[in-house]
Image 1 (cartoon, rainbow, N blue to C red):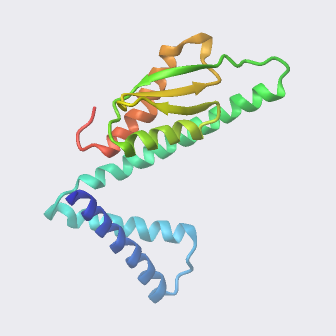
Image 2: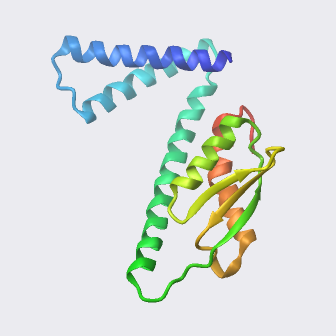
Image 3: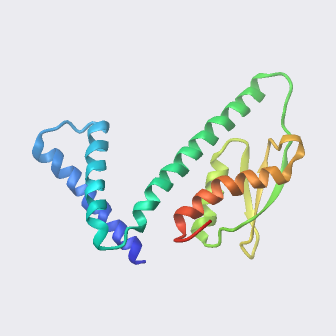
Length: 170
């Protein structure tokens, strides 16, 4: 909990500092200017953090990694679905996959299920009552390789998510 409150304080300081920089310097508030000022303030907070817990500074790059991974998966899945729609032969090999979860908290399971559902060709259906299994409908299971599908989700979305939400994972 202390880590979350430190992160929130840093976020408030960063946003306030970005606002003040643009208010008093006369710089235009464009995306690149905002990003540069925010990065500079983030760096200064990182330098000052040697006096307290730095753990959330490790999580920001991991969160960006998850975002980039999601965008890649989104693009690839969109292309697969689009190709299947515009070609005469369907490549769909659908099925329901019971995915055993390492994610345990409600927020971990919700974010994982959302990432899966936002990716074209997959849909999170349900979670078992003991929260140990997520049921996913997948439209494209390559050659019926259910285990490969499970590995792809666990080594992709779930692993990257748990690296962010847990202090020590992997």
